[in-house]
Amino acid sequence: MEKEEIKRIIEAVLFASDRPLSSEELSKALNIENKFTKELIKELKEEYRKENRSFQIIEIAQGFQVCTLPIYASWIKKVLRREKEEKLSLPALETLSIIAYRQPVTRAEIEAIRGVDVGGILKYLLERGLIKTAGRKDSLGKPILYRTTSYFLQYFGLSSLTDLPQPSGKIRKKEKDEAN
Amino acid sequence: MTQSLWRIEVEKFQGDPYRFLEEAKEERIDLCNFSLTQIINQYIHWLSNFEGSIDIAADFLLLSCSLIFLKSSLLLPSSKLEKEEGEEKERKGALEGNTELYQEFKQLAQELKTKERERTLLFTRPRFKENGVYPAEERKEKKGNIETLIHLFTQLSSSLFSSPVKIVRERWSVKEKIKQILEWLGRESCICLKKLFSSAEHKLEIIAFFLATLELIRANKISVRQEELFGEVYLIRKQPEELMEWDGEGGDKEDN
Image (tube, rainbow over all chains, first blue to last red; front, side, top):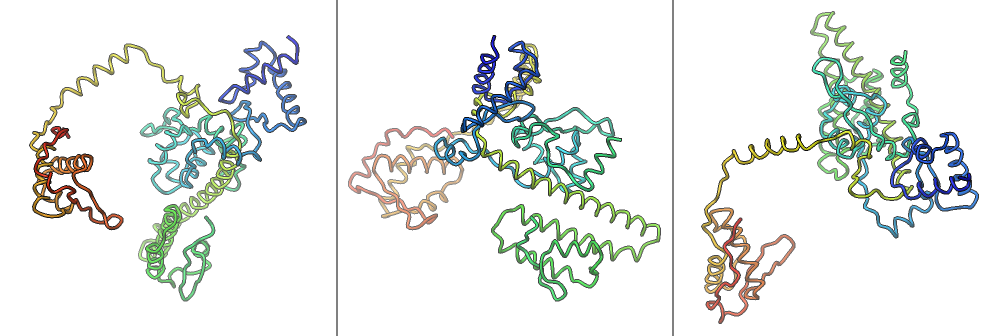
């Protein structure tokens, strides 16, 4: 297969997909090197940019996905009337950020920081598919551990967890302590 | 959330409650010189007129509690032993440390909110409904086989049939209620729906009354009128000469 043909195949698959596709997934299907796939995607990105297309390829949830440019958002909303996804409340976002930076984390650990019960919020986040249980902690009572999901990355438009906003002060210090 | 709606208005301090908490924590102001009752009363007063988000109100509740805690920890140690004082200080330090940590997470939550907003501007191909919100890989983890399904079904069916089912005797029929309403309307020009319901002795009878009313409206025998929003509903007869000939077609026995 020629390079141009492979590039068009990748374009077609990305266009048709309703979820982010990893370069590994694409490489495996096309039987090509991962590096080559990434290179082709980069070329596609460049093409769209040069041709002033209304869509782009974004890196999200450790994969690639085709999406529209932000400037067209109001028009799309006007015409398509998509089912609106409920926005997260501030307490839910706070709980989620604690899970994101401290994962895997137990309910008690989250409550120690927030100072209030988070049972209801955890249930809600689980239902939304933003977090998942990740086994049990090897301590007294074997409490359940929580982690963020890859949908979490998609929801916030992050390519991976390292893409999260950089914490400062205490959170960072704790992270360093844990790494050592 | 740093912009507060509730303002503290006391003799020695005016303004942002968060600032007040900050000052108190850093011990730049002495909480012992403040009447917390007055401040909390202001909060309660503000709350009673407040019509905004519950999150904001809850934030202030947390703030008020922190103030009370700080003041109580200031007042209590004097009556305790030195060792306990140390513990108290440690506990206070831990609380402050946690509050600080929490403030940082609050900041991060705000940043995530921005990301959330930015993300809503990007449109991708919508997910198929059957996929739900869960990514495919995560759904795969929950594998099942026919044995577990059978096992679950036997478990479920045994629990379903073991508990006795209570059947309420049907003592009221819609047909009978239609007759009753019409008779009533024969005597009076209009009836209040509330009065009709209050004459019932069981929930099922109310339902029967209600269905009878609907049936009568459908058959164009009565009309209903409501003077104002959420006001009383009145039933008014339409053709007085035909009232007693009503045979109640479609007046099925109501079955809850």
